[in-house]
Length: 377
Ligand SMILES: [Zn+2]
Image (cartoon, rainbow, N blue to C red; front, side, top):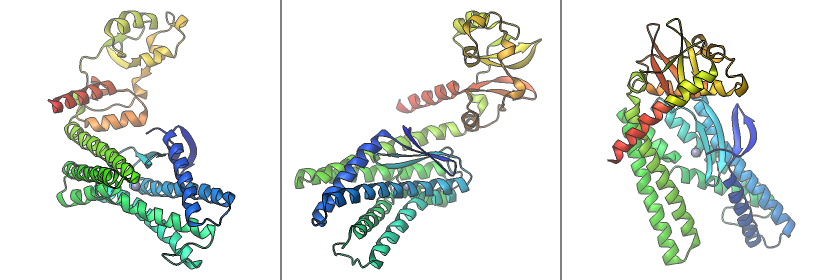
């Protein structure tokens, strides 16, 4: 989920909105206007609209706090958090790496619903201190806003604790199974399967409500169920994929017969003789039988086309000394993470000071898609 509107940074995490957020924010504001008109018909239109807008903004602030809680705990557990995006069905924290132990996973998952619960209780508590009694209509606009936000945050905490992966509750379930069995992959499979069952129940009860009770809320429930089903299926497939990938080494995936070029070659010759002829985008640069660096079409594109014939490969290549390298026995997943972190598409594979091959994102993708095909057969 990519944010299209960037709001800024909190603790180094960029906060953004997806387009679908605007639609849901409008729907929530409109339904709040409806709600306030029903419960407090004595209010003027202006008061109702202001209350509705303030409430929906505060609702999203609370949602953001929920996601921030996940992200900050992930950060203290040593994981890198890139961004938080709010979208139609809530928020997502883009945590780059997966938790490496069950305890971290447990705390990262549970802190979100806990935060929502605490926010809800604090809001209801302050409404209560200001004279509101449960089951009665709030007396003032401020108390009315507090009560609505209080209930919605508690509902949010409850909904997120449904034990279907990838909801927070499903992650908690996964962490607990992982904790007990010590098997991360199996725990995700179980949690994702429970997630699918929960999703089916959502869809069934939603459709039942819609057709039997002519209740439009039922459609909404079915829609959430369908979304959940899709998400849990995707995470199940991803686990299967990663399980096959996790015990692979760089040597299993890398390209050992990499293409080499001479350093004194001009960029024009490189493009004409090598890139166009082989279709390869990455070449190892040799100088007197020694490897000196890597050149990719990315570096070539940075040079003006008219200067290609006067520019040598070695003057624009990435020298070996500036490149991060991996060993053949490095786990492939670590190489992939390194490429992501350094924003590189390929890494030289070095063993005993000698180049053994090159691993690229393309190799990893090809390997993974071959795996998926195998699974489908
Ligand atoms: Zn959450």
